[in-house]
Each structure stands twice: as C-alpha cells, then as structure tokens.
Length: 162
Image (cartoon, rainbow, N blue to C red; front, side, top):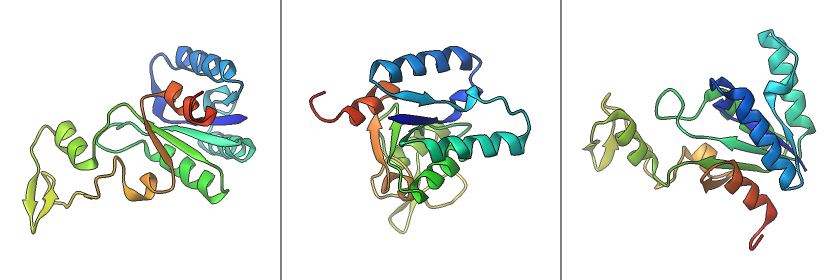
C-alpha cells in the first residue's frame, strides 16, 4: 500500500532522519511511505498542492495526532485527515498516550479542570469535550486511533495477530 504519513514530524529538527526511519518501517511492512518532505515545492501553494496530490495517490493515511504547540493536534494534519476521509480513504491515527481529551487538557495546561454544570471547563472557562475519547469526536469517530507511534499504526494495517 502507498501510505501518506501526516503529522507535525516535518517540523522536527531531525525531520530528515525521522523520514528515513519512517520509510524504513513502512518498507519493512511491505508499504511505500509518501512523506511531504519528499517534495520539491517551496511555496505554500506548491506544498499544499503536492500534499493533496500525495493524499489522492495514497491507499491510506497514517497520522500523528499527538499534541502540537498546545493540547490539540497539528491543524494541517487535521485538514489532511479531512481530505482523506472525504476521499473515503482509511485513516489510522496514533497518539503516544492513552488519555481522554479532559486528561490531556489538564496535563498539558498543568491545571486541574474546573467543572460547571457537571462538565469539565478549561482554564479559559471553555467547556472541554467529554465523551471519553482521546481526540475531538470529529477525529476520533471516523478514524482508527491507536496508542503508540508509527510502528503500532503499521501493525493495525497488518491486521490482528500479525
């Protein structure tokens, strides 16, 4: 399968090494990694168009949805997931921790959540989605979410017992 690897990993200082390891892991599982870093585009529009083309050519998307610059996943990754879902492509999301949104918001903010009307509220007084899901329901419901990293996401593609 051709797998589009979505996530903020392209912003890591060791992004080239991460991409090499991701390609190796995918190849070892019998798949081809489609990585945004492999493109030659340097403009915003060019990068966007190239990534959309990669998603269109992919058989599935594996997405790193770990918190990025806050409590939520990378917004660009969320757009890529939405596009893949609109094309009816399977999306496997992975998270390093097995925790609900409420637990993540409290952990990342370093502040225990208050409650109002029986619902959790963050430090800004905004309600925190509380369905016990690891991500916003618009990500958690249509995707397969696994705890771990890219190896665990690849394991889901291999199926049970593989």
